[in-house]
Image 1 (cartoon, rainbow, N blue to C red):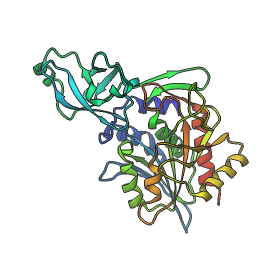
Image 2: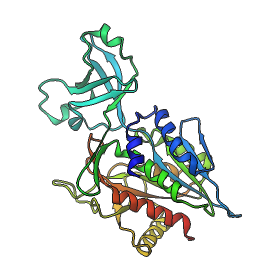
Image 3: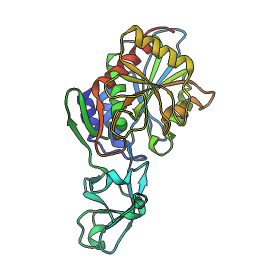
Image 4: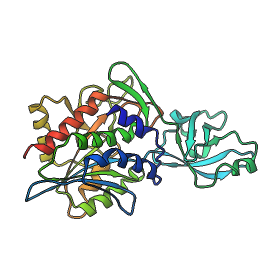
Length: 332
């Protein structure tokens, strides 16, 4: 899984521009599924056909996109003014290296002498690509071009890594690993790598409408309560898969939550229960699309979400994978 994550992290994929990531994922998963398609919005959908007669449709989902910046204006001095694509945290973003789809590099920086936390917002930031003036900058970048904080992957102690964008390339890597390990299932299994999650969970909605799944599991990151100054939260790095109960956008299907808990206990898979008081994932879109679906989520505990150094424990990711495999292979 680590090697797959390493490949996916390197690929540029800001929301709405996920084509390169989709290509990398398709290459990885194609040998392990029966078909791979892309829908009108750009979702990558891989199908592993079931062998049963009265087949259900299971949907596994992780989003491909990442947060970033879009160029809105080029100043006379060559600096680039930007707007956000997704939820940027500007204090940790300050002075970070960024890279454009073209490979052009720069630094995202705040205006000088910002004193208050509320001053750290898009209108006070710019990207410096080293251009001498506007004419020089216009040779290298255009309005509408997108940049992301430069990807990285660093091994820490034990099974922990610091990287970006862990959110949600690690979820994508988990789905690929499930496809590799899943023998011919009884039911049809759809692996959905969704687009535009960071700007409103848009891709998962259209994918779920087309598939009309009986049930779904979403794989994404969640916060932790185990760092200095953190808000109280019963999620810790290294304590296993986080079975989502609720976040600000969804109340997960009760039967799905209970089944995941039962399977985790039966297989001795490390797990914990997640109640997130902020944010949301594709789970909410899938749950309420069309006639609806029984939806649950397995979250990866992550420190420093939406920063240049998101930290995870790979054993937690493996627990999410193992629990999903049990969910798919054992009858209700």
